[in-house]
Length: 477
Image (cartoon, one colour):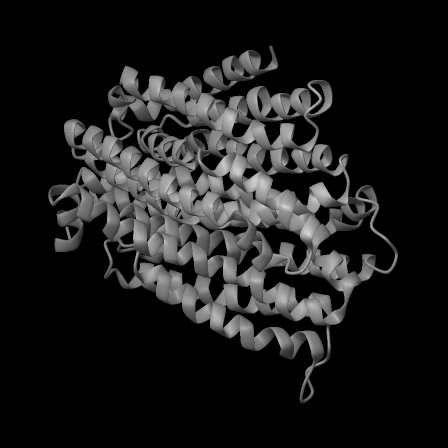
């Protein structure tokens, strides 16, 4: 085991958390650079081009969410086997999960490519937007295999405690994407101008390079993973196991994407000003989520490694410290956002007094409660690290479909609060789901589940299938 990874298992917990959380957060920020760069260059083509990208994004995001769940399963298994010092299984899990991700992405990408016209017709895309949206969406689906592969590569590296290397790869590809975007969008020196589709082509090129670099790193075996081409021979028993473990996480990620879409419909019913306020507020919230997600992922990795090593007391301490850190960091950010809410909104929409005022109300309504969100994400990371994917899926479904959307609808439509009623649904649902997650965490059932035990491998499929049915039955009521 590399010295740095040994330090993560035995060193000071705070230092270990930050050693993982900071590079993960930086990588997430850089990943967001893809969308910002595309928006920057595509915006120079006009409103129809911007609309073409906007209408394509939810569909591709939903598809990526399905693959993200499978990657979470692989990362969890790798962390536990790595903590158990079972290098053979670390390599096997990494290779087989990558193979599964590639197969799933090829199927989803092919389906999406041919179904793209149907998607756009269902969305009612305007005739001037349709050609650009179709080209952008289809190229995005072609690149899905590279997107999924690199996403899984990051999960593999995170599982063995090596979060720094992906940062440098992402940084290089983001810079390259900034240079390639204008080349393919506007054309230059024999390269044809592709318009909106050119942005997707540039991203396809950079993501394929990132995937190839990731594969080379894994085959070289210098960062805690040592793969050979023979490791990629299909092990259908493992693939089936990993699929059943990761499927609830895929539902969880997809439910988040779908929940945001449904909430947008409710917000749109209150007019353009409310939509604009939500747009600015949610953008700021996405920025706040970056350190919170980085911390949650680092908690999940460290807890998974310590569960694999049998260090349950240390795993519990990591969870508690992570929750306290998440609460403290996001509470501090929330206090800043509450104090400077008008200035933050004005940064995105300077000169529009109506949007600034409405956006500030949204920001101030939810910001003082961000700490609960930070704590809940870290505790969820603990549950996920132990393999309790159905529990985390159920918590997400309850948060969005039992709490957030119904509360927003009732307060805004039937309690006479209007748009502020929607805003209040965010802190109320955050506090409620945090209290529930604290109860689940405090019960300690997650300490009894260890995926590296032989009997766990045989029980996962039946257990998950039964729990999913029970969870769906509970939510539907």
